[in-house]
Amino acid sequence: MSAVMAESCLTRNEWICGEYLRTRSEELTDATVEHVTITLVAIALALLVAFPLALLARRWRLAAGPILSLTTVLYTVPSLAMYALLLPVFGISVSVVVCGLVLYSLTILVRNIMTGLDSVPDEAREAARGMGYGCARLLFGVELPLALPSLMAGVRIATVSAVSLTTVGAIVDHGGLGNLIYTGMDSYFKAQVLTASVLCVLLAIAADVLLLGAQRLLTPWTRAGRRAGRRRTAGIPRDSVMDAPGTVV
Amino acid sequence: MGVLPDTWTWLTTAEHWSGDGGVWARLSEHLYLTGVCLALACAIALPLAMWLGHGGGRRFGGALAINISNAGRAVPTFAVLVLLSLGPLGDHGDLPTIVALVLFAVPPLLTNAYVGLSEADKDVVEAARGMGMSRRQLLARVEVPLAFPLIMTGVRTAAVQVVATATLAALAAGGGLGRIITAGFATYDTAQVVAGAVVVAVLALLVEGVLALAQRLFDPGHHRRRALAAAPATAVPARTAP
Image (tube, rainbow over all chains, first blue to last red; front, side):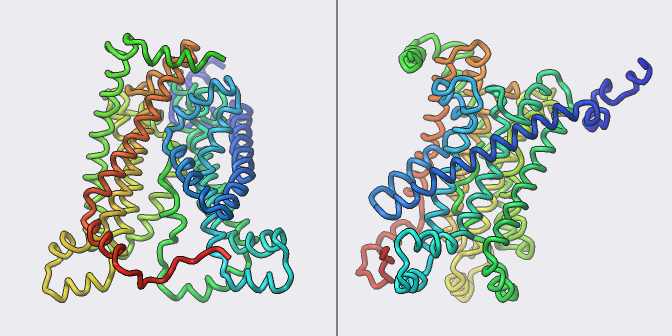
């Protein structure tokens, strides 16, 4: 038995190690589940907060400036500092990470929801009003569906960023896969660090692809336009590049 | 709660600012790292963007410029820092940190500069070409000035990113202001954690603010645009909400 152990890639501390995947699969699953949960809760909360904020900024233009600049300021704060600043509020708990991610996601979501609502054609609004739609029905039946492409672009950027930023939560012991990266660094455990990092990137890609699929299903009418527009040279999708004020780290 | 007064006391205690591990020493480490890496990233990304947006790389420029930004978002900075410090670069002092910082500063620089250059007003570019400008003159006198606002947006984003990444480097045993935060966590000193975070946040906001100011001051199109804005409005009026 000891001879087998000596030969294993774990003892040789290799970057890629099947033995590690087999023996620590439970630990990896737990970390992944925590990672996904933190990200999902944060994005859901961020949407719940961002939507009223965007409506407020639209209804009352005076509020738009302060709301946009406040969320931009929040976006500038580095993640380690953000979690550290939230520490006295929540203590060492998962709320620190979730709250930090919500604050970061707000910047992207509020902007994109506002862009989406602004892009609703006046004709559509007038037609709905002429058909006797009230305020709430106009918002949820006409404006929100038409704003979905921009909103979903925001959700995708926010989610991918959140998956990556969750790792820094390792500083308060709630970083999902980040915990494995952090402890792996301390014990010089190469396989653990690489596996957790790769899982993180895979999570981000999976989330992006799933959200893209959801967007296609939710907005079937955009596909007809895309097919017609395919012959033209593809421009750079503005809301995926310009609206996001960089990336937080 | 007492955290805020404690933080204030920490920040106003002179010993915390001086000495080897003091705020000033950490701040100068941080600024040095930020400056070196931002300069390196600009030296790599801006010529590349010019080649992609103007020169021979036009065909695959767009796809690269977008995808590199998306990839930059999906890869966790923390993971890259740790991977590099455990890898062969790990024995070379600050090198893993510098490589990671440059890697994450390149995407915003490249994407913004590329978009700015490739979307420079085609009519103006044609006119300049018609006046007999060489490719080099065209780039230096027309395309770069037109793309300046976006290039500077890229520099600003990259600078803020580098400041933030340099903070994270402390988690992977690097230097910089993040050390104050991680040291506070290690000793359960909440006041120090919060004080370090305040210093980092102020630095990030200062960098953003100073560069935003520089962008406004040095924009070659600034005076012309202001003159245009002052001229009687013949443009389409802004759409008002119904």
